[in-house]
Every structure is written in structure tokens, then in C-alpha cells.
Image (cartoon, rainbow, N blue to C red; front, top):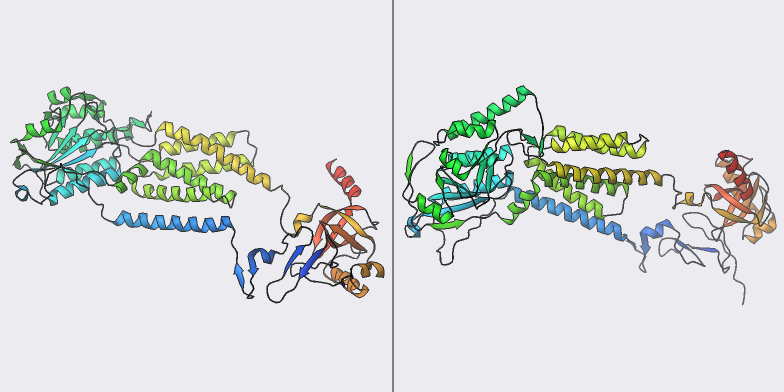
Length: 573
């Protein structure tokens, strides 16, 4: 087999000297049709960084090649952005109302006369905590009843309480409603506590089913379910504000204000019988049908002192439920869910920034953070609580970085618990993040943040795996003795170079900043199946195992393995 001619090839990334046809040596192509590339003849692995990004085609035009994680990240970012824009648009759109009428009922007409003289009753329901989306749903139902000239609005209620701002918004719409409003605590076992008590007394007709109760409306009795003590002056201020607000409308409704105030001052609760005997409610009914039957023909006095007679014989009952959008957003704006979304969003983005390319934590964190920001825009957020949560996250990161024997971690847990309990501002009703949710989220958040930060700090001691720096510390074998700055003619000829080329390379290295002492001894080493020009501070015979100290351009600086081991032992001592 004829011997192939020796040729010298140059890669744009670094210069490599090789002999074509020798196994294990490196080839470099300089084709003009496409970008330069290089590969190892034995492993056939791509080495050139340019080829990793751009792939040459048969027509000579380069094409961009993206990795799967980058492609997924781009698509995920686009989906998150689209979801955010859709959510923003839905926020400003008018929420559609649904109407569930019994089978055979004609479509809604706008007046009772258009429906054959039948009275029209709009039915709404408060079945959970009072929050902004629920207030939007109730207010929308009241507005719809007014636009359709309904005869009555029936609000069925079973709530443990809720936010002060949302409660006031509902009461304001009830007081201003041109259509009479009935609030009915039902079914059996239901309650109208805290904010529900205020809403119950604001209605034109207050009714309860057997086996229900109401009251327990003391402000600031608890925050997050935990009893707390506040300054006496502040407590009196909040208490007097709640009492004045209750008297402002309960007295005009004909309620027993003296007894109603005990639910605020003493936290007293009332059964349906007690509430009826104390003139807190007007009707005791077993079912909605029984309630409408008792109200038929009854004359009531409105908030503006006008009198209205209710004609509710064989009424048309239209049930208006929350839309899918309102049901979803109602969960998002609950204080507990808002706190969980906030922490999940922070942890997801933190995990993505500390471990790039994971994709899934970043996508989940971005979605959770957008939902949390939406809830923050609606809820009465206390920024002191939000600042405490930020301080807690900072303390968790510092705990992973510095040795504090757990002091920083304990401080972070306390700060996050206090921030969670103070996150929602609702002093009159005491609603906010519950203690169970605060504890259940704080502990995992502290553990995940500290563990992730320690993993990040541990990677700083890892050896670099890309670029020329990855060869530092690697072992190589001297193939051409490192004896002098100018190798012998035989060695240069064996590498396919002339002495002038080698001398020029040595002079170029000295001109680039290398001292004469470092480049006094030069030769060739085999490093990872490739031949590299090597320099050392001492002569090294062929066949010796050496260790790479650093890489300067196309030259590696080496030292014998035994000498490097002695230096390491001395440094350790």
C-alpha cells in the first residue's frame, strides 16, 4: 500500500500537527464549501466549537442547529407569555353569566310581564371564603338582576368569613340594589360567620335554615388561625370601626343592634332560633321553596325607607353560577393558594437560575409567579409581610454559603412564618394565610433553598469540562523528548514540519509573553490521542508521564507526574 503524503492542516479553533493515515491522529479539513470542521480518526467525534452551532450543507449555506433543551425553553417561554396575555385580556373582559332554568321554562325576558306575569328570582351562592372574585360574582349577579328587572335576589350562604374589602364591596351592592335581596344561610349545618354575619344583617330579608348558626364576628381575634394580642389602642380603634360600620346599616334594617354588637365585641354566635328570637333575622325556613312561600305577599321596607310588596307566587327561579374563569380565579386569590403560588414561583425560578437547562422548574415557576402577581394585584397584600418573605429567602441562601450553626436558617423560618401570617391585610375579619399552610410551606422551602444553594457552591470546586481549561491536570505522554527550545531536525521532520516552522513557533510564544525560562525546553506530547507542542522548565525524556499545568494558545505547559505529586504533598503539609 503506497504511503500517503504528509500534509499539514489548520483548524480555526487551534493548530494541530498530524500525519494523515496514522490511526489515532487528528485530521482537520479546510473545505471551502462549508465551515471548517475537525474530528478524531479513531473516535470520529466532533471537536470544533463552530461545527456544534452551525452545520454546513451541500449548497454551502450554514444552518442553525438548536439543542432540545433550548428549543423546549423557547417554546415554553412563548406559551407562558401567551397565557399571560390571555389572562390579562380575560381580566378586562366582562365575565359571562350562566343561567340554569328548569326544564320547560321559556327564555329569560327582561320583565315579569314578558314571562307571562311570573316573578323572576335570581339565585346566587356564597359557598366559600369571601374574596375578591366571589365579590365580583355576587356584584355581577346583582347588576344582572337589576338589568332584567327581577323581583327578588336570593343569596344562599355558607361561609366561614373572608376578606374585609370583599365583604364591604358585597354589602355596598346589596344596600344599593334596586331589587330586594334575601340572604339565606342554608343548607342544614351551614354557617354565616365573621364576614358572613355582616353580609347577613345587610340584606332586606335575613333568613336561616334549621341547624345553622351565625355570628363570631370579632375583628383581629386571630391571624392565620392563631390568636394574637395587639395594642389596646389599636384594638379599640378596629373594634369601634367595626361596630360603627355594623350600626350604619343594621339599624335601618330593623335589626337588634344591641345584640348584634355582642357578636363583634364578645365574639358571640347564634343558632337560627336564637337569631330569630333576638330579631337578628326575619325568617326561619327549611328550604328555598318554603322561604319563597313565606315571603309571597309580604311587604318589606327598603334601605331608602321605601316599601315594596313581594309577589312571588309560582316564581321563575334562575340560578346564576360562577363561570369557569371565576371558579379558577377564585381559587387563585385565596390567601393560602396565593402564598403557595408565590413560594412555588420563587423556588421554580431559583432552581432554573441555579441549574440552567432543567426547563421544567423554570416553566412551572414562571406560571406560578404570574398567577401570584395576579392575586397580589387583587388581594389586600401587606408589603411588610412580603418583605419578610424576601428576607427569609435571603437568610436561607446565606445559611448555605456561610457556617452559622443554623442561626440563619432559624431566622429565615421565623421571618417566613411572620411574613405569611402578615401577608394579607384584613383586620376587621382576621382572614389571611392559615398557620398550617404557613408551616407546611416554610419547612420545604427552607430545605430546598439551602440544598440547591449548597449544590451550586459545590460546583465551583468542580473541574471545568469544556474549553482548553478542561485539559488542566490531565496526564499526557512525552512522544518527543523535551530537551531544548528548538527540537531536532528529525523530530520536526517526524511531525511534518521544518525547523524554521518550529523556531518560528517558539519565537512567537516568547513574543506572546512566555519567559525564556519556560520555553527553554520544548517537545511533543500525546494528550487525549492528539499531538501537542509542550514546553517545560526542565528536560523530560520520551515516554515520561507528565501533567498539564496550563494551556497557552497552542502550547501546553507540563511537568513530570512525580514532581507534581511532590508539590501537592508539600502544599497540603
